[in-house]
Image 1 (cartoon, rainbow, N blue to C red):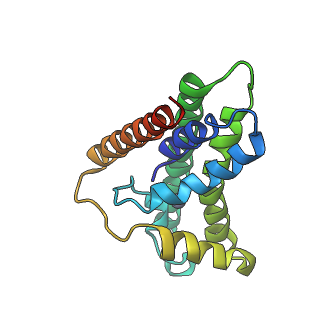
Image 2 (cartoon, rainbow, N blue to C red):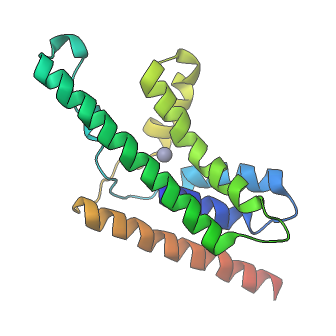
Length: 172
Ligand SMILES: [Zn+2]
């Protein structure tokens, strides 16, 4: 799923355990895999579409550079929106860093995957396999990118309602 959805859900999960920030971080990290296992539609990263550099002409290389810049801006914006939503909905003034630990924990799997795609270092190979080939849903919803993102936020709202609804039922 997209970074803003991961960060918000990670903060939501961590906010359930405000006095245990480390547990919140681990739960945020684990929440990433729960979300990725749900069928969804991600936005497209166009820089991942082109082949190896040596087969490309100069014009293709320039285009690839622009695609990369566009993707970096998009992904950074996505992560920033996630941190803002996480802060808006799950900031707890008594435990001010818990929302951030949950959000960062939830973003780490995609960051590690990005590092693997960038450097192809084999120390991250098993993690990449687990994250993308084992956990990540193989079902891509047949939606355009805008509807795909809307659908992810709808899923997020449902999951947060389930999370806080069950907490209410358990503790009341
Ligand atoms: Zn992921």
